[in-house]
Length: 497
Image (cartoon, rainbow, N blue to C red; front, side, top):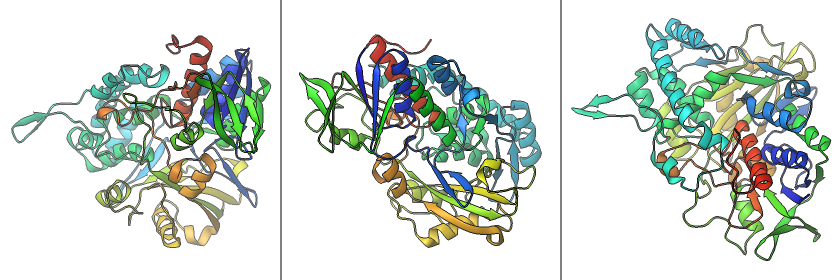
């Protein structure tokens, strides 16, 4: 039985802790804040309850596998997991809208044809077929296996089978997601629909590789899911599974450094001065935090995937509204920007700031647990913003103005609102500027890969959204599975079968 110290209690770190404990190891989690869950936090006020992190769960199979491998109770006995239908409602800048059924290709094709014109659904359906091919090519190396030592192969090869496109007497293939939208979908609203999936993960579609097509494909193929009570309930269930497996949690335990002995990780030193010995250390922290914990050693060296930098953050506005949730309202509505170029320049260009017309995601769960009674509604607004962005009152007013397109009578219904800024995310996760990591993607010269779960310090491993396979709830869960496999089986571990 090995002694294992886990730094941080985000979803990836807890997934690793539960799997390592069930393998017979003694696991202690050191969390500098007062609670677990990383970005999966909750705000409660006046009987209203809000998620402040992810609002929906794609690819729930990752957490189903975690619960199968770590105990007798399956995931569905620990949380109330429900499929959201429609998957999303999209409000476009020209006033048209479409509601897309959950995990139904035929339904999506029909809805798009009816809303946007004959032929649009077919083009989107054909795109999903190509996106599936990219998914099939990258699923194992980017989600289920440790990062390949020859990772440049993933960086160089574009797995998305772009359609040949003739332009100026030349035949070209889409290399970016924006080019896929322009050349293959050939409809501005379809392109906006495609690009919204990248924007939700903080990716610039103008430079994101065509392989980012797997992001809308994941949602289409595996559905979008909600946990009754909010996604914080998923974090609670994973935490309780850790406790059932005898994982020990120490909250308010700020780790000052990782202790090394004979050239390998040998424990952690707390800010209070105590040294806790361990045979392995799992760090579920942001890259800057990890560097500070081992200043005397090179954690990531030349020739390895470097940690991502410059990832955007998220602005969240929590709304307590008078009046109950109307029937047949979509759980999620995407209000698209009226000026796509200005939005992308503000997010990713040299003029950082909130655009005049940001894309706003409006979340309206049909969940009595989120409100004091049936005569009120809890709504969350989410906007991608630059990391480190300082939010002003006028920024919040702009977001409320855009959200009013999806929420008629918003101003009259508003009891109060709370704002969660990049600074709040930084406080909760330790990520510089409140940056939110994106999932790993192939191609793009490796810019969207994440560092491997192993490090140059023997005995030190990295889990969570800032390590392979990157950000997002499914990816964080898989990072925990990969770290557990590498510790239990050793470097010969090749992933789940």
